[in-house]
Length: 511
Image 1 (cartoon, one colour):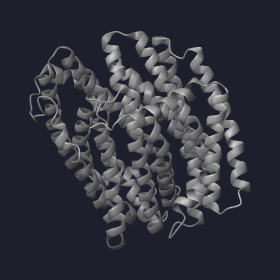
Image 2 (image 1 turned 60 degrees about the horizontal axis):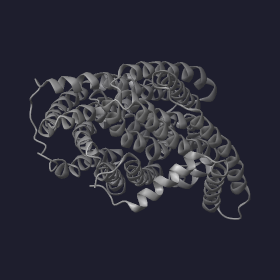
Image 3 (image 1 turned 45 degrees about the vertical axis):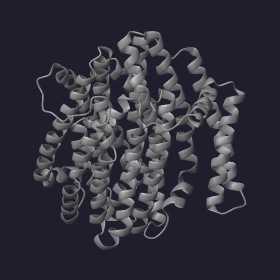
């Protein structure tokens, strides 16, 4: 069953909730075995080159470039041409990924020397070994994201939501079964196996739509150039964003391997609310944004952007504040076991507090960036992302000597806020967004979040229970206060959020 943007967002949200929860289980298993020691720091640093290759291919942004062109074919009654275009990129991404993987294998020692300058030679050699093991991940992910885009173009969101769940399950299995014997090499095997499953689960259904998806290498088609014209600037933007993490990793390596590991664990926790809110809303709204822009319905586009931005911020603002309030007990409950000791709890919590400051901005930017993409403007987000990289480096450099690795996290949060502000200002000038009603609702959310802090802190301090019970009470109190206050204040966003939940409950899963 095909889904509209709200139901699609809710379905993706459910899948991402499960995936991110499994991601926490994955990190908890890894944390218990390795703590924040040099092995797990090497494992986390080894993701940087595979992730950069994936972003250089712009596979993560493929949907935002392909879907507008695909819809143009559908509008002209050229369905077969749309599928042929997808088949071309399936082959193109596969070949490009193989070439970059081979280049990455050769260049790994030089790249790692730049990535972790603070590591000793033995630790850098370990990062090189793990990097080379995981270089197949971007190959499988690149093909998988083409398949994901085909599903999303049909507003079928179930399989794209299931794929990351399988990825996490594979790494969890590897952590439990392989890591005790192979160490972090076993985790790297799980990463590759999980990325293969991410692709495999989407493969059969993607070939069953309409005329069928047929791999081909017809690069001379004009629509291939049209997609590439949209895609290449996005590749630059994604690569620039990924370089933020290179900056964080390089500067953290000058502090200690534990700082690298703590930033990694904290970022994983932050990605739970981001994956549950930001990615599903951005992904599910994009096809509708593209359709409205292509049809010339500017009023509809303004309403849809305001709706998506408002709903995502309604959920992101309390998540951002909540992570600061419950960060320390949350890290204890999830990670403190085995080799993850008191020092690891303190280091991870310190990073999480500063990452959480920018969560709301990162979530909100997802909708804004997708709007620029739907309008065919790829250069503006790239330029803003480049400016954000400078903010990350400059702020991180100024703060890490005072705040340690927390200052590095603060640098990234500052960059996220600056990017959100710049995107908002430019989009408002172009579309006249952010009517007074939306601004008032966001203010209501901020006020409710402030009251939520009081309730959560009170529950943490005075609930007569153990740590898990007090954390649960704080979460329930925070959610209850936030929903009650926004509802009593007449927030339209509260009503619309409940409407999404009701719609999801009445709908059947997409294919």
